[in-house]
Image (cartoon, rainbow, N blue to C red; front, side, top):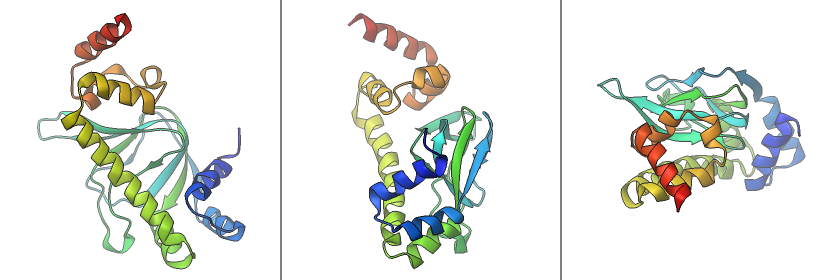
Length: 197
């Protein structure tokens, strides 16, 4: 398996044609970090200082409402970026909108917000990377809302299975049910019904 920064660089150069020198410069400003299952790496309501790129593991984005209920809005796994949905502007101390919790032991590349701003302001195509990262997260959240409002529960289950092929082995079923907005019993029945078709 390629080294973690190699995976990160492959992801970056898929979208932005940075020079080798620019990649080295970016890598020096980032850090490989490891988190344990259950670690909350970004907390809703707190200033978001970093963005992450997952090379190993899976996380969930969630909020807790006033009744103490957990609402899951997103899962992210290998080769995806992770944010708390704060804007990339470290000068304004913008706060995360959602929590980010590791559902497995994770290895990530940590990118401080100030590094994203450095890339945007100082590298020739840096603004393209910043724009891509921001758009990717907005599109993902819009995708969630549109699916919730326009797709059947079976279509939404198929979609999450396609996006995360091994999710049922990696994530507790009650969390998948929460993401889909149904009970764990309903999810179990849907999976059984789908197998019998």
